[in-house]
Amino acid sequence: MSVDMDLVLPVGDYDDLSVLVEQVRRAEELGYARVSVPEVTGRDAVSLLAHFAAHTDRIGLSNDVFSPYSRTPALLAQTATTLQELSDGRYRMGLGTSSPPVVERWHGRSFDRPLRTLRECIDVIRQVESGERVDYDGEVFNVGGLRLTCEAHPAPVDVAALGPKAVELAGRFADGWVPQLFTPDGLRERLADFRRGADLGGRDPDDLRTALTLRCCALEDGERAREAARGQVAFMIATYGPYYRESVARQGHEDVTDEIHRLWEAGEREAAVEALPDGLLSDLAAAGTPEAVRETVERFAAVDGLDAVRVGSFGRLDHDARLATMEALAPATVEFGE
Image (cartoon, rainbow, N blue to C red; front, side, top):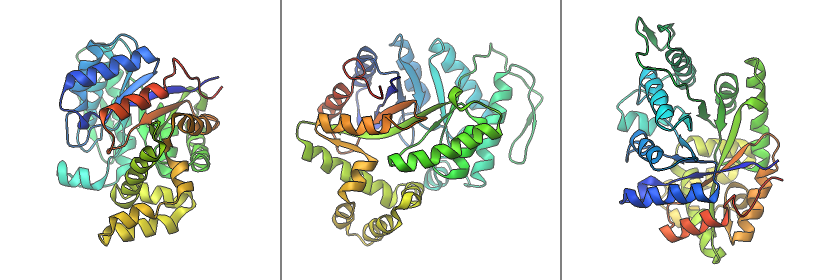
């Protein structure tokens, strides 16, 4: 059975919303199952998804990460039920803790007890979406006495997580897991944590959705694609987090991640990028000629327990390169994971 192919749309790289709408519509034509949008310090994802819902008919809609540090659990539930109504049931909410730099420097909140905060947030969302009066007395959130006054349209919740405990939490309490920057072997190892969480929650893992975000660049100029991928992956390991660095190190590459981070912090960024081995790059991203990229996607699609590959992008790519990649991996022309 084929895995789904999803698309992550880098909305922050575009000034014109009409271009974004055209891409979502094209993704729908090409057979992509879902499109997801990030939200960090640019446009808010709720407005974008509502706009996309009005301009599409079939494609699923998701956000990468909404955080209980930037929106209250009750507001997240209101957002989920409203987007689910606007999209006629096509919405899945992406939920996660985000990271200390975003939470503390952008939202002015203390990044305290992230796993407990995430777990209780899911609990409150479930209560609000039930339509009943909310009565929740947790360690982080104390909410009660009110109820949702519009019709409830519950949406599935997918958790973006990297570490063993967070992934176990996703399996136990959420409806899906969205990993990123994993090697095939690392993904298999972490899927065991996800299944364990599902077992602890008395749930069938087959009822949950695992959708890997895989950064992709498919160009006839394969070297250009690899160069873009190397810079992006090195950046994520060096400074984006530190959770990505810790996750890749946990997958057996601590020496590499430590060296990349050391060089980057010393201002030797070109050397940091070059310190990323070719083999590890090929295990963390899909970049090269269209044929090579499809082969890499196939390797991930063959991982037991993976339901979807989300085609991500790289910051150094222009619009034409992103379109070429989207077309090269189109489900309408290529089936993965058969």
